[in-house]
Length: 222
Length: 290
Image (cartoon, rainbow over all chains, first blue to last red):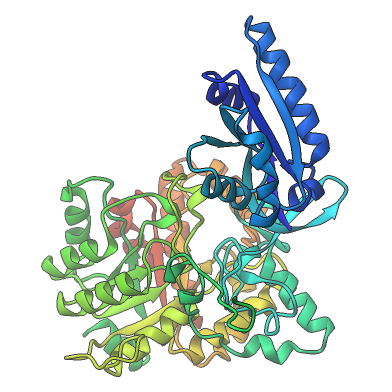
């Protein structure tokens, strides 16, 4: 999932200062799962914003809406009936959702309520960790199902580096050394030989090196 | 005789590390280099070691060359992508630098520009392969070069906290040798007996092994290394010796000299690291009988 964290209240209040009526839009997908911008968080933020404005002697009308998927034009279209009553939109979706609203409603300012952070997985209740950087050329088949691009601080394809100590990364002792994990996993699978093979330098064109990316599926394009 | 010739002919090589200044005043670096000219085979110039922004290793290496001192420059992948690295490596050759050490880079987050974006386009092994390719006249994109560079290329072996880490480090070192490393520099040696047994494993790599001799400057530093450096193995006896010495500085220089003498018997060279005390290198060499 795409993970996100809500921005500090001060920052949100600051960008909404010029407005009296806003749409606060949540998303039912990833940000709901990571408890950053789903229906529940929309309700909480809405109350917090209105209270903060009241404390300053001002009034803020907040229309709360949570879309099924904010990154999908079909669902964003549901805002059409509400958009005119609002001076601005605050989106609690990831950056994809924020941009989709901005693309659809060109004359309406849109503000993000969350910081989109990474593609990750839930490690346990309340803890999410980065797992994928969407590099466009997956190497998990070579590395025992553990991604060195997303999980090694240096994105080494031939690790570990000298900063690996007792299975931990030199950047932070709370970070597992991805190459220790890979080594342990390959060993457990009896695939140590794979570790001996040098992986050649990565072609970053499939990642951000080639500029913004697009997938075009000719069989689906209408 | 050049570093490369001494290395290939099995002679003992003495290398001294000298950092470039954080600034444009090179007088101290030049003076320190002059002090050891003719007494060491080459000066190793780190490449923004520990993530501290300094004058580039390439400039430091050229400066050594201008003083008539052979240099070995460190190259890492943290700060430059494959374009910049290849360009600088070609430039290094043209400017007279004959030796490279492809090194592990410390994290940006631990340096003095913590907000900088790390590059890490490649890793050490991939860079080694790139250097081999450049020497064969082809760049990483497969284009033919107009004139090939030529280098003696080495790598580092990282410290190991335990046997499992040592085994992993040896595996990586084997890969580095396969990828073209012609010599390997090991972590600092504080216990000759212990290093002797590690050396039996290192020798299997089939390339010259150059251990590091790190100048301990005080009891505090010795204690710090003993506590925080994985696998350093500084003995309590050594710490006691420094603590009881009437003149700590002299004792520390003597210890470094003694380790070099001991290493002469089992390795093919030493890299002396003094971290800011480069002006004391002549004294260390005196104690080592070099």
